[in-house]
Amino acid sequence: MRIQHVITRLIIGGAQENTLLSVQGQSALGHQVQLVCGPTIGPEGTLVPEALASGVDYLEIPSLVRQLSPVKEIQAYFSLRKAIRNYKPDVVHTHSSKAGILARLAAWHERVPIVVHTIHGLPFHPYQSAVARRGYIAAETMAAKCCHHIACVADAMTEKAVAAGVAPPEKFTTVYSGMKTEPFLHFEGDRDELRSKWGFTPNDIVIGKIARLFELKGHEYLFDAFLRVKDDYPTLKLFLVGGGLYEPDFRLWAKEHNLENRVIFAGLVPHEHVASAIHAMDLVCHCSLREGLARVLPQALLAGKPTISFDIDGAKEVIRNGETGWLIRPKDVDGLTTAIAEVLSAPDHAQKLAEQGRLWCADRFSDMTMCKRLLELYESLLPKS
Image 1 (cartoon, rainbow, N blue to C red):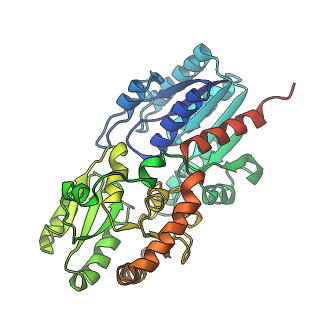
Image 2 (cartoon, rainbow, N blue to C red):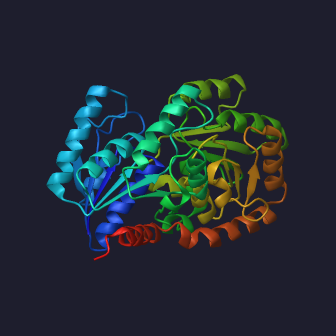
């Protein structure tokens, strides 16, 4: 098949890694695949050099920008139609909100045989204004009429989209977001040496969080919980992996609480180094208030790390409370503190849960499992001769 994937930006992020792996994997399985995206600029980093180095057929559309701009949107729509006509794809597969709307419209009007969209995370959520929420729902509902099927990275995304009236349930299929599992499953090397590179000693107990330092990522709840348990564990440290606009504020918080030596900021870490960062941790906490299905959850379990998460969106599809980890009500600092204390006081039990999670995630989150499932979806949508 000729497959054209379209995404707004190729920054360092879960949806973007998913898209790039889909392109690379489907190419490796013998299909002709092109990746189309807008300019990748901003503090989040870029996956474009990796895409180009791997030989991906890459096309950039300058007008496909993330910011709202009626003029740019009209330009991007017609540029996408031109790109589709030139490539003549059997499948157009769209990702992210802006590209997902414009490229679905363009592909539909170009009569592409199969148009598929992946919901990595819904653009509407409870933490935005009612006007913005209604606007995003209306846009997604309109765009859903211009595609043949919608893949979701979690059942929770389907449930929320259906509840909002975006499309009927039969139009959705869950395809878990794939990743290169091997670096997480198997760590080769000296762990003490690895940890020393991040600034930790062999005796340190490291609580890690991987997320942009930005709103709705929930760092403040982890900070509050850390303050409650730090005196009981003098070697306990926080390891924050990710960059973002809130880094100066978080560094100030650490300074005000005399924790500069106990809160380690890794900054923006290339995605190929995320596995080593997780292997340096003793416990992974995910306190975001909205996600599709955060990649850090299966990544942490694949690495055999005890994992705590707020019970949001697709988290419960990976973290089964009391079986593969700890699931806490969003914003519940008391619950988060209790869970951290349980992990630290009973490490053998925590490790047992992590190992159960590792077995559950090993095949489900493989990049090639994802690619094959997507190809099966495309084939099921092919017009019957």
